[in-house]
Amino acid sequence: MRERKLTQRELALRIDVNESTISRFLSGKTEKLSEESVIRIARVFNVSTDFILGTTVIPDKKNYDISELGLSVEAAKNLYTGKVNNDVVNRLLENPRFATVTYMIAQHLDDTLAGGYAAQNQMFATVGSLLLGQNQTPEAVQAARTANAMKVPTYQADQTTIQNTFMTVVKEIKKEAGSDLAAARAI
Image (cartoon, rainbow, N blue to C red; front, top):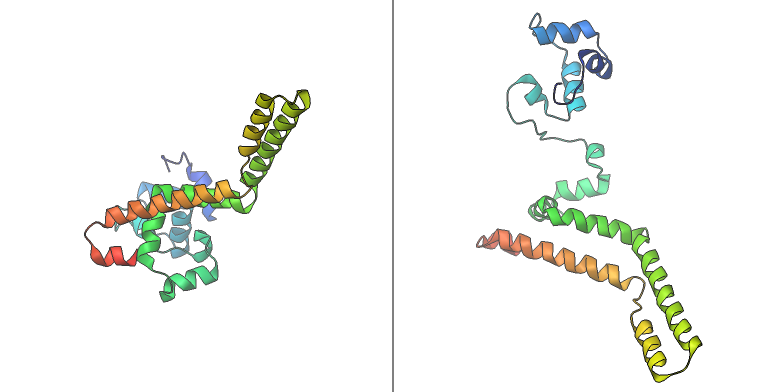
């Protein structure tokens, strides 16, 4: 509660109990909380119930509801049934650079980057037109060609960046796997 700067009253409201219940528990006047209260407290602090009960000093939850993880039912089923290699998925998710790859893919899917490249290409086309409109000297023609050559196909740049970053992640994971041939084969 101190870490999260949460008062007894705020916690009581969030888990739907009386403030006096929290007060008695924290002061040691009672050692009992309902099962539901313990679960709700764990959810408020995003820790395991074992951590709340003091049976472990590790706050990390071991079990998550599919909706808490943001997984679709099909994705969870693929993990649970072994259709995908869980070791590979774990290694990907644990790699800090992989989060960047997922962000880049999201931008690719919503056309954020494509819009930027389209605008950049339009700017190069305008520069080329302006150069040729002023005069037709060989230098102006060459400068216009150079500006035109700087255009990038709208989706090519972000796809290439995504591919390169993803392959860097795969190389890092392979390097981590090192001499573990089974893990390397899985990857």
